Image 1 (cartoon, rainbow, N blue to C red):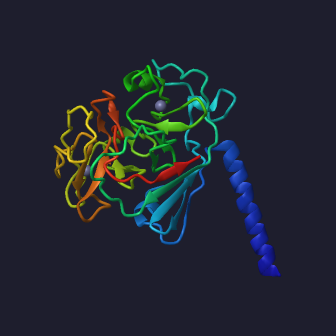
Image 2 (cartoon, rainbow, N blue to C red):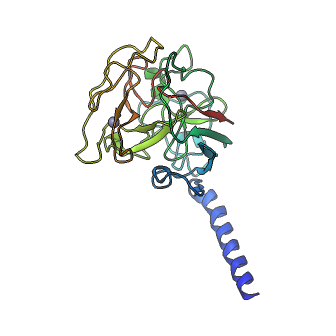
Length: 276
Ligand SMILES: [Zn+2]
Ligand SMILES: [Zn+2]
């Protein structure tokens, strides 16, 4: 009985702590199920991760764990936009029910690559549980114009309240030059900030690829080497988390967006699925 009472008190305290968290500090619920890869359990938060068959399932309310202009001026998580930026219309952050089914062992796509603009609600998840959008803006804008609506953490919501990053994830990697893991794409390949680290040396800047990403053939992987990137700003190399050389993406100058982005126009791998 004593044990039950103690457990009940602990649960009450936990519940109270979570309630007060959601009122006074950014919402962030992190759970890691049995068998989740240590790459995710050690580096991801604000998402609930489980393993189902050959996939990792990531679920997220997609609420930023930081202040944002787009929480709205009545929120205690509100802060002004960076100097020089303007609001993305009246868009406001709202809670989502995003569920990503991402292959645990990603595979390179052969033949025709899958476009990152093919109607996905999100094309990846950041290491702080937020949606990744690709290198395109809503027409007729281009992303370099749309970047002027980013908040202080380089994200913004679209018109139904889905907060997302096309570019820097500064809450995860300040300056984006730490060779930090900043997310995972829907195809299961990891996304790093601008710098790479083979796991045994110092951080280095991979050589960017300036080819326009217009083709959709998987055979066009020109530039992919241990120290340079292909047109999807990815390459095959070891990292602190990948002990055998494996494809991964970097936040890098994107020829289509004309600014640095997390992903390009195509997935290099076979994408999983996402719902909201
Ligand atoms: Zn956007
Ligand atoms: Zn790399």
